[in-house]
Amino acid sequence: AILEARQSGAGQVLDVAMVDGAATLMAPYFGMVAAGTWRDRREDNLLDGAAHFYGTYATADGGHVAVGAMERKFYAELCDHLGVDVPQDDDRPATWATHRAELAARFAERTRDEWERILDSPGCCATPVLSLNEAPRHPHAAARRAFIEVDGVTQPAPAPRFSRSRPAAPSGPALPGDHTGVLLREMGLDTKAIAELVDSGVVAQSKRGR
Image 1 (cartoon, helix red, strand yellow):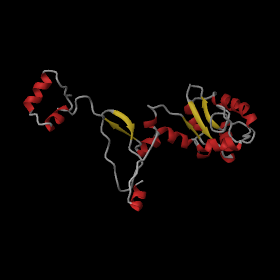
Image 2 (tube, rainbow, N blue to C red; image 1 turned 45 degrees about the horizontal axis):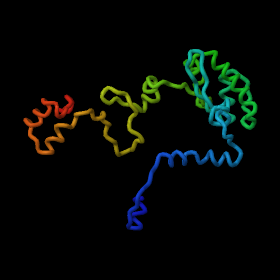
Image 3 (cartoon, rainbow, N blue to C red; image 1 turned 90 degrees about the vertical axis):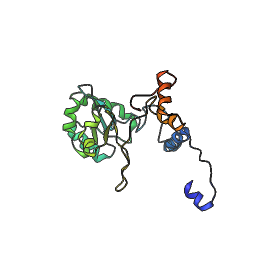
Image 4 (cartoon, rainbow, N blue to C red; image 1 turned 120 degrees about the horizontal axis):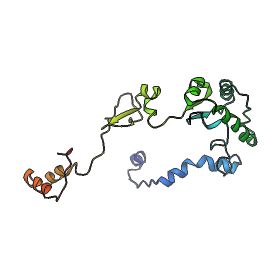
């Protein structure tokens, strides 16, 4: 809108709705349904849990491993590290359920950490599913400083990152009463008047905002 306004000299209202954005994200799937390459049923397609080479598997300790070995060479490497001989059959959806059961049985034989060590190869396209507590401590996340701590709370660091412009570290959310004194002073009240209002319970002022 800004770029267009520079050309036309006229402004315009920008109508942005979440439902429109969600619909736009679904555009490829509507196209695949029309082409006959996507079935409008849950867990019956390539990316929604049907394909054995693209999904998650439970491990012996109750953990999970995510697999995304869609290309044949990557799937072959995955099977080699798993020690199984399960066809990919990426063009035969009817066989996927049987193959998924075979892989599920294999993953259930070891713990998540054991599989992480065994499948530690970029070509396997497999990774452990981490909990919210584990994710910030993962070596990759730690090396990239992908998480920061704000007021004692761990949260994702600002992204994306720029080579020159560094965004300021985010601050914690305002608590009720944080800005009472500031606002009342802007309205012309002095310190004594504000204190009287707080003492009488007319207004509240947080300790952090004093």
